[in-house]
Length: 534
Image (tube, rainbow, N blue to C red; front, side):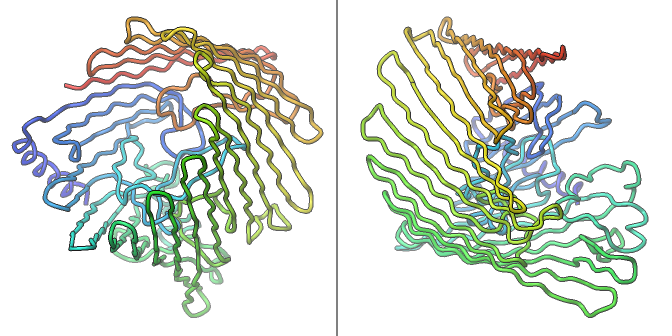
């Protein structure tokens, strides 16, 4: 499928280049130590991006990436036509898709290793978005299209897509017609390596329809289907479990849902109901279908002095979707999420949040379903040269197998701007983890802007880490980092220098990071980013 798609894209590319009066070319080159996309591990990689923008809504992009230990380069490409005609939208190549809140189909965000940070969100992004990370593992590969049609008093929109991705399994799995891997775990099996030598194709299709009445009320529905296909055209069972002759695996997955949303200047109300249907093929029994239900609803209120939101998420034991990406931690099927922001004065604000999540089915190492409760609070004040003074606290409680685990973190921050070109900053964090002792991190920093286009920032920190209580720290991360911080697991000193230069439509950034541990181990990292528009 890839060759016809690329040929089709280049034909469209040539036609758009002729039609576009002001085509812009953007080039980017970078070296980072970061996660490529939604991966949990950080590593060194080089990445190059080419983007040809025909208009603010239409562009062709190609990204290549090479990681340490990787024999071949990976790449992602896409063509987006956001204005081919009134209300029309087209995308081809590598892209992400999201329906409604993302409960059935969502775009996953970067992995968040910080235990005191909220995981995920209730998606409000576009239905389709291009993948420009260079990592094709987590994106769809195919085509998508959408159309919006206005009518007097209301409008309709329709979006659909089809994706076909090649992945690899072992010859034994190919011969038996089943694999223990799930659709999600197969995403990373892109190359032929080790025992994985046989190709298999992941097919996914979906569509969404919505009606918006008077710019306030939106009613919509969506559906999707996914399965595995061998090159011979036969099915392949996935998530197979059990012994040969008495096992069972999934033949396909499908789902559909309905959503409602009311939105005005101050109030947003939304609700979504999704139903999944998994077809299971046991070897010694007739075919079975497992049906699961999932619900998410919430409210957001925005007033001049107050903003608050509450979200409820609930999935039953049989709900299954390999592409879900919505609010909360992965694997937790029941949760409440509440946030509040109060601004009694222009330069004073308070934020608070509470989330409670519960697994309905315990994992292998759990005898009882675990429960996680996270409470956060922060207060911020600013006045003239005092750009920010802030206190924040987070309290994490986990109940697993009848035992309670408690963690808490307190942070103090002060940021001064005595001159427009000069910034001074100091911060201290204290973290407690049950009876293991208190870990602390103290940091100071300075930032200078020269000639209105050259920024230089320097930060140094010292960490005192108690046993089994690592501290998560951020030290001047590069722009758009997927995992901006790192864990300090023993007493250490660390420093980071970041400088950036802007000149017209070109910019260049450089970051140097140094970590010296008490054990004598040290780490040095150099990252850079360059971009130019022509």
